[in-house]
Length: 525
Ligand code: FAD
Ligand code: SIN
Image: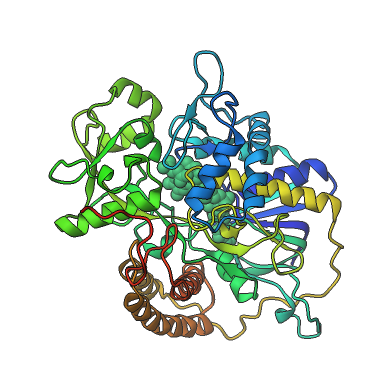
């Protein structure tokens, strides 16, 4: 067993920001960060476009950023939260810069500002097309300088510890006192007892297979919180990114940043028609739900597997300067951006819902906090404005830090039983887990994707029940490993997405069901 003051699950922008801030403020307290792959692996690392924040007060204003966020969120944002996050943004960016993150500047040394879909002004702070990698680098460097942070890579959090695991404690209120954690190298499961636990475990993209997210994005934090009976909301609002590189159904999709459309690229169908203006007057820069559905509709009409991003009219030297990573990756696929169109499809990208938190990042469970993509704060509503998620992760890590600075949790003295896996055997079930994972991903892509219907969702729900039963049998018989835990978590997350989709009886923001009134896409006459 291990004891810590602050346990943080996840080492992306949210988890590391919180760890650094707590460690700087409380040099005598112990901060433990567990992360299931190498320390840098996260959605954060792959973020391209940047972080939205208002720095240019001549052309832009907080009010304009607030309005853009509210428009994208389609009536479901919490206005007070939107205001709070947006006004706090520049301070959090300056803090990142103080810790050593570099962002691009123009010839006058001012921050260079990009523009993405749904933004009425240029306000996206970036580091070429590898902004997330730069943020992750700077945060890890700072975290590694601080003696009171213990960063346990290749450690997988399996379950939160609550009264459910403590038979002698009777309490009406659920509280969290740490987590059971699997050391992925040794295979041992041990207890981390913590005064306060924060989930910063990121997104769920892998539930869909076709996704821009890396392998770690299996929704573990949300599944753990759900099993612990925390409140989870808005899981139907999955954001599909319109322009993931189409790799002929291999699954993992490299992102072609929205900033490329902000730079002037056009979307064309196979016939070469620039179709976006038929759907929205903002054309390629309409919010991403509209662009994704427009692409889906074009693909359905033509029966094509993808549409194309045309950059051939752009200044290619400038393109290379802004998007070196995208340029090189296309070249590796034998695509020369100066003369070839890039094949693209929508892919699962971001979860707008998640573990419900209050304005200080507190969940419905005592001593359990959440921040970043696994949380639901009210900022994004029914659809997230591009580059608002890194912003949210930074702001909420700071909110939790500020709350904990004023309300230090009491040291927990309760006795926690060890993880009980007596009688469990380790069976090599790799193949069956892979097969079940693929089944789940197919099911979600096919029946709960960009365009849904009640019939499809019911089919998905039915098929998921079988998968759930099969997975629980594996879980009860086998000594736990990472892939089995992830499958179990993804099944839980899929259940939440399907059930919460079935409850929504309208089309709103990123949610689109053919059985309800169309709200946003103007179909071609
Ligand atoms: P993550 O960065 O995903 O970190 C989660 C961490 O939790 C990881 O370290 C993971 O290994 C760990 N973890 C998960 N489960 C467990 C477990 N069971 N045990 C232990 N550790 C666990 N947003 C923007 O604002 N701007 C952009 O330009 C942008 N571009 C993007 C491009 C791509 C390709 C992708 C995929 C996303 C992009 N996003 C962007 C979204 C944004 O990157 C994420 O929402 C944000 O980085 C989430 O940060 P996070 O700290 O909450 O989670
Ligand atoms: C992108 O660069 O297109 C992604 C931006 C985001 O997801 O916010």
